[in-house]
Image (tube, rainbow, N blue to C red):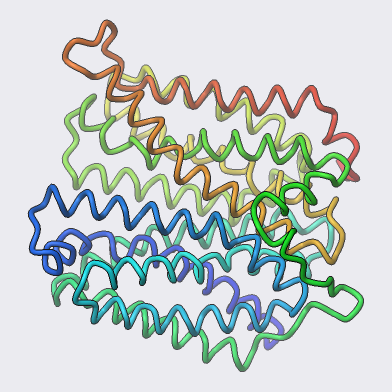
Length: 406
C-alpha cells in the first residue's frame, strides 16, 4: 500500500496542475473587472493576455524544469514547484492590481510546468512495456483535473471571485505536505546528468532530443497531433452554438462528456489497446481514426448525433500516450526529464497557436458574406493536420527503428 503513495502524489499533482487552469476560469471576468474597473469587453482582452502568458511560460520553462530534474532529481523539483504554486495562489487571491495578477499567472505557468517532471518520474518507475499505459494514466488525470476545475471554480465563485484562489492554495499546500513525506527520489547517481543551459530551453532541448535516432520524426508527428486535437477546446463552444444553437449549459455538458470519455480512454482503455496492437500500431491506426472522426464532425447537422459521437471522438486520445511511450523507450534514463520537457513545450505551442488558427477559420466560414457557410471547417483543417502527422509517421520509418514488442 505504501509503495503506491508516491504514485498517488504524482497523479494528484497532475490533477492540481490541470485544475489550476480551469478552477479560475469562471471568476476571471469578475476579478479582472474588479481590479481594473473595466467592462466585460476589456476584461476579455486582459483574460486572453493572462491565458496566453500562462501558455508561453509553459513553453519556455518546461524544458528547464525537465533538465533540472535530470540533474537534481524529481523530488526537489516537484516539491519546490508545489510549494511556490501554493504561495502564488495566495498572491493572486489578494491581488489588487492587474499587474499582480499578471505576475501570478507568470509564476503559475512556470510552476505548472511540472507535468514534464511528473511524467519523467513515471518513466523512472515504469518497465518499458508499461510506459505507454502509465503515460495514459497521467493524461487521464490531467483530463480529470480539467473537468473538475471549472465545476469547482463555478461553485466556489458563489463565495466571491477570490475564493477559488484560496481553495487552490490550500490544495497545493496539502499536496506539498503529502509529497514531502511520501515522495522518494528516483534519479540515482548513475542517471544524473549535468545541467546545461544550452539544453534547458525549448530550442536546445529539441535539438538534443531530436538527435535521438527515430525520435525527430515522432516529435513532428506529436506536434501535428497536438495542434489538431486542440480544435476541440478552441472552437467547440462557437461551433455548437452556431450549428445547433446550444446553450452554455449544454456546451458544458458536452465538454464534460468528452472529458470523461477521454479520461476513461487514457486511464483504462489504453491498456487494452496497447496489449492488443502494441504502441506502433496504436499510433498508426489512432491517427487515421482521429482524421476520420474530425472529418465526420465537420459535416454533422444534428446536435444529438454530435453528442452521441462525442465519446467516440475521445477514443482517439490513445495516440498521445502511445507515441510518448515510444519516445520514452528511445531516450536514455538520464534524458527522461529533458524529453518530457520538450513534449510539454510542444504541447504549449499548440495551446498558443491552435485557438488563433482555428477561430480564424471558423470566422471566415461563418461570416455573413461567407461563400460557403461551414461552421465545422476548422475540423476539416484539423483532419488535414492529423493526416499530415500520419504521413510523416508512415513514411519516415522512425517507428520501425524503435524497439517495440508488437
